[in-house]
Amino acid sequence: MSDPIALASSTPALGLPLLFAGQAQKEFFVNEALCLLDALHARAVTASQPAPPASAVEGACYRVTSTATGAWAGQEGRLAVHIAGAWHFVAPVEGMVVFDRTRGDFVIFRSQWQPAAEVAVPAGGTVIDVQARGALTALITALRTVGVLAAPNP
Image (cartoon, rainbow, N blue to C red; front, top):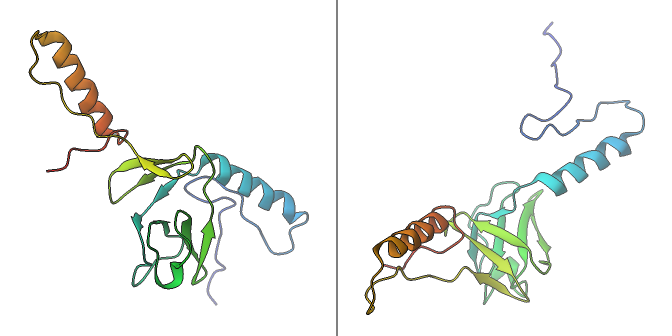
């Protein structure tokens, strides 16, 4: 006879409480887990696109762009989450920020989704201050690195 499976009491990544058969007051554990997820989950999307991918993994999240087609038709601007083999749509709220993993930068919802503006690196001018230009260039590079500003288009 094989040994019984030993389950942990919490999830490995976020430490969310797990339920056990016969556990009393399960709603407390479920509600705690949902509150922790709501507070701690990194808001990120796999990509921003107008149509569902050919195959999506469980829990995949996408930002639906215009003009949506297929299972996403009519869901422009919403977040599409693949749960239990079906697409579930979430309306964004004002000020919501998500990281687009494919683009490598953030987009914010302000009555519509807006990417960070591309900022040009200082160059030229009649008065050149080498230190100021160096500081601005370093700042822009740092903001691009963390995804706050979009990388320049080639």
